[in-house]
Length: 630
View (tube, rainbow, N blue to C red):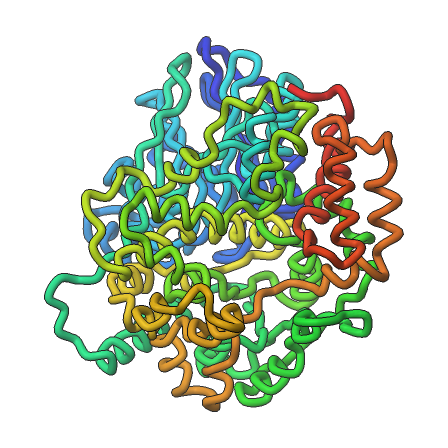
């Protein structure tokens, strides 16, 4: 796990090595174990190393192959590298290290860009071919590892984080106002935009070949999520569960491969519980980690947000060496500058608990297993699917489902909230951006199950991707590698081909729920709390039944209560100041009216308040205070 960056000059001149070194140093937190630079003709590569496999100098990067023809700067882990190595050795390739990096290099030398289709793991890589004068960029299937790019000073720049780009003296500076509107609608980015003007993210599951002086990257998609059951699949639910158990154990085993210690996150839920159940059998006494919350000032549903008790019970059952951290009101205020600095553009949720969780793990381990992906693959959010599944057309589905994803600005209030910049973003069609995630319009949709599969694919490409960016950056800020066993290629291929009925139940019954029925929300929830049926069935092999049927609980603090209570003065001090930087982009009167409704207990705008606090810190952090717009 590392940080990569580089420069490709347009006119064939050599890259500025001082600028390349500055870009590389800006990523030092991602790789505290070493730094390397390589320049050849118009291309320069920078690398920061976090040594996980073969920690000797043989694993240093950028790594060269075939007498220097190929040079690779690589961030990630390829878990099937041993199988690929054996295949390459049979083809005559010799190896001098035990790293997956050298296997990736040899795979490209043997198969060219098509090699990425053989890689099972997480990666963002840059490979320079000095003979062909081409730069190859690629990103893993799911987007676990980030890669950004921009144009600057007659060159194309790329880096694992935006701060790597900004370290170049010619990098663009300013706010991407279209990115701002996208974020303020979805609390995420559904396109390649960021909040940084001129900076784009390379899409997940794509690669591109670049030549000096050529056009902007044209990314070729080599893989995409496709949720659709196998035709004429005769396997019984029990047989499917057996296969899932085999593939899941295989995935966890692969993700435990390391020359340094590996730990695991452990909440009280199904996803991390499944991983710890298997990992503890393979590595007895594995270290597990939970981040809980002090609920002294919480109220309502947030009184259930602390999962330490459930995690402690699972730790006892699995025999893990368990560690905990407890977050209190005020911890968000203390870590906000560090979270903004490392996360860069904000993403889904409130993020700061991940900062503390990664800090806890990094005191003991350099690698941690995360449960991300289980919800998106196995239907962990059934309350989001059911109503959309009642649609009678794709257009109707888009309208119904779109309503779920307006996460920050209330419907119809965009022009008011974005008033200072509205003239520059009013042309954007947010529904078309939303619709674009689905790609080509489906030819026909006949059943509720087909609509649910659309939901699963959408959330895997958007919500999950946002979570992966949060986990990666806030873990790498601590020199910690975050691994995601649920996103093993074989496991994903299996999960996406499962029928909806083994993931969520009572679909047709719930669709008949009368919209005018008394206590509809409670009955709706009671009938839709059954997500991840097959995964719960598999977990029942390892843990008591009450753990398998536990309710879904996201990793979130009781911020609705804290914003109204212990943190209320922090909110007021930052957001009621007429000179606050955020009001250069958003309308102060419109936003504080919404904040008022939250503080008075009339609405729950915790995500909006977090986003306003984040942007208020983000603008000065990256040198873009009032007037610094693009």
